[in-house]
Amino acid sequence: MLLLWIIIFCVSLFILIKAADYFTESAEKIGYMLKISPFIVGVTIISIGTSLPELATSIIAIIQNQTEIVVANAIGSNIANILLIVGLTALISGRLVVKRSLIDIDLPLLATATALIVIILWDKQVLFGEGIICILGYIVYAAYTIKEGREEKTKLEGIVPGEDIPATREKRHQSRKKRQDHTFKLIFILIFSSIFIYLGAEWTIKSIIEIATSIGIPTSLVVMSAMAIGTSLPELVVSIGAARRGKFEIALGNIFGSNIFNILVVIGIPSLFKTLVIDEITFMVGIPFVIGATVLYIFSGISKKIHNWEGMMYLLIYVLFLAKLFNLF
Image 1 (spheres, rainbow, N blue to C red):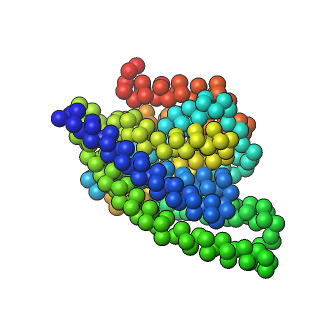
Image 2: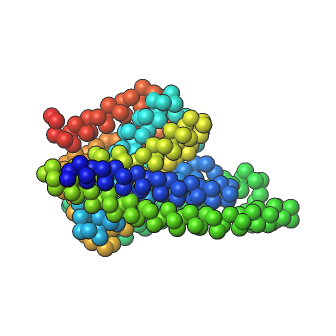
């Protein structure tokens, strides 16, 4: 019976990730059609799309009254995003280099969001009001990022805000017509993939509960290890693919946006329906490692370069996290 549930877990997780991939691809096309800058596409559209598995599984966990899964899911995914994905991406690509100054805005935002969630989790629960704070924090972050993206777009086009040039207006009209031709197809993909995201998430949570019960271990342990790695695969594919094409802004922007989304939205939305409980493993192991991983990522981001030896260090720390999680020492 255990083997059957492991197979169900793998299949449902695959469906969940694949559906999220289709969802993200269609949303990404919309972003590029709107001529949004690559980094902004990374921290908004792509990061939200690649974080859909975490959000979907957290909502299903709430429906099934497994509230401890939610925080373990978000924390485990953030640790995997930084240590595993950035580590592998840097190792495979040789080094990650970004032209954008991360120290001015992006790194402080990530640090602030992480600090906020650590303070909220300190009493081992997330209440309704705290969930509202998380969601408002993400809205502010998203609004600021989109505003900044529009300013970058304006500079690239050489148009002063509010200025309307006839030639530009004609180009916009033609572009709008082309976008409308693809609208129905994109909407169909979004709706269809959303249905499979829900089904994949539902069976992923069911299988996790059954596996944990059969083995006799806490569900949060399975969530922060196997599920965190599984749900982080979209980020891994996007980041490595972007890095190989030399689009390092998308590779790192994806992780920035995904991590902020995880700790503010993936935790914030479910807490509006039920009080979230943080179990001992998540509190004693997950939280210290997510703080350490975020601080390490911030220091790497200040130099705007992450070398392959740093990627190796990230991976070794992730192995240390897994070893600590399973109480191997």
